[in-house]
Length: 217
Image (cartoon, rainbow, N blue to C red; front, side, top):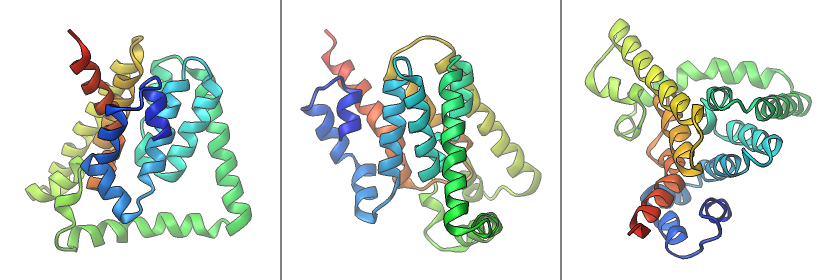
């Protein structure tokens, strides 16, 4: 809600109500999903990007650490927008987070996590009812029965589309909400896995753009 208020320029009425009551936000809250926090950091990063790029980079690093899908294409966005100070800040903060996790839990946790990913994908693919909830092109490919080369080409095409969406949005100066929408949508297009509650990544920008459209003469 704080990030939403920052994104709306301090307007606390209809925009925040719509954000709080959107289906994706309610679903994420019901299951205790960390995407709420990741989406907030991503929104704050876009708000601060022009004025305080180092802080924006730190926010993007936190969003990616909590939920990688939230900022998967953030490096593309920062390069396209020429925000190299934010890019360096994000890299440093991410490196510090990784280093801290290794000091606290050991390097073995990272190797275990990477090794577990294929089994996790297989679990999602074979558990009844889960695939329809996957909102990425990978999930759509599985629902369509695409395998092998066809599935790889499908995923690559949508990943490239995500990169184009993000690049176009950040290569030109524009409002904060459309940029946030492009980052969220592009990252979801490129992500191998995201569930319906990860639609929270699109909610703040969608609400702001909708309300601004309603307020136009």
